[in-house]
Length: 314
Image (cartoon, rainbow, N blue to C red; front, side):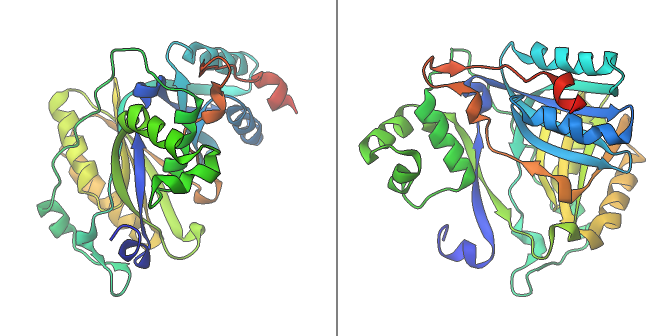
């Protein structure tokens, strides 16, 4: 089913990594440049050793949204660079928030017609078919036990789940016995779960990406917001910070207005400020875990973002 039937319908299996288990915290950044022309330079800085995992340009402000994997206790280095950019009149403002948990949301086949390869549902049906809230991942208390080989295996599993572990041997440069040892002793414990994803047909520019950021006021409102996010058939990721609940939606362009109308209707009865970021899909970068930050010789993460000001000035 996984390796023969699902690919026929353009469905693949993804891996959700338990980042705290391997010693990485996750952070969410929103930023607005002083001048719109500065955005590309700021993005270049974020790509250089900052632990970037996702980047998207927000329209029409030409501002940005990004997420990072950063070793615990090291996020101040990124904040210092961002402060430097703000004091240098390059960043107008920014927010940097730590994620308490994050989950990938599996593609829901209930609302999809596989014969026509198209979405077919009514929003009344969506209201009736709510999924239960996803449970947050549990942070490991003990120090993570991983080495460079474990990180490489996790990175490749994120890229593509193989039919057998031995297929990773040549890619990573490990013999099969060594690879299985690392998988069974460390890697398996760092996998939080699996999810299904639908590969959209057509050009990237035909898709709409929206990131919803809800500043909830209490636990009840947070749970309502989470249920709303999970009800939308196009929600692909959900995450929570201390003050925000967020979800990532990717849908065919013709559904954009319907999604916004559905959310707008629900939020007439829900307190808390909601911000919607319209992402330019042609600028999106979705990466794997930041494996280049792991120092193979020391056996630990090494976080040293490049100088922001020097990169932006270029």
